[in-house]
Amino acid sequence: MLREHAIEVRVRYQECDPMGYLHHANYFVLFEMGRTELLRASGGNYRQMEEQGIFVVVVKADCRYHRPARYDDVLRIVTTVTRVTSATIEHEYQVTRDGELLATGHVVLAAVDRQGRIRAVPDWLKLDSIDGISALDHQQMP
Figure 1 (spheres, rainbow, N blue to C red):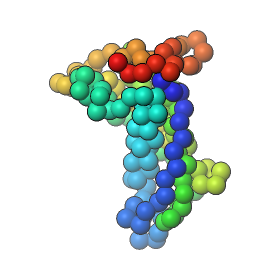
Figure 2 (figure 1 turned 180 degrees about the vertical axis):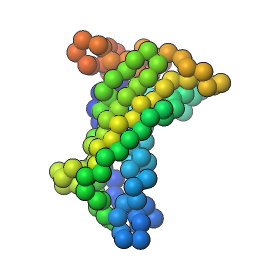
Figure 3 (figure 1 turned 90 degrees about the vertical axis):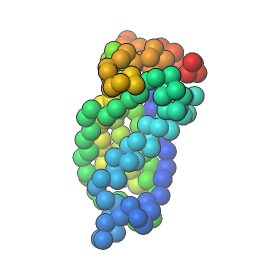
């Protein structure tokens, strides 16, 4: 599993408020895009996880806005896995435009089963507690 991944997206018109700024709620959409693509770049995807009865739900999310993004800006979203416990996965996000920091975020996900009961995070998603690198780096999802 990769620890960090970056994507670039362009701000679309429908994502903006009447002033032409990216609406504040859409930063959470960017965060989800970043974490989905991090998983995909690691060889997994949410569809496969769900077919195996593994679901992840957001239990905490926050965003700090530093500068506004505007319509048609190209944004870089860097997603980093910062902590994995027996049942949670934490990600941090940086949203930049041409190297300028626009927003930072933090999301905590919990692993649950089909009935919404807490379950263990699969081993292939866990980070090695000593060096912060995935213990199963480069291994594909089962």
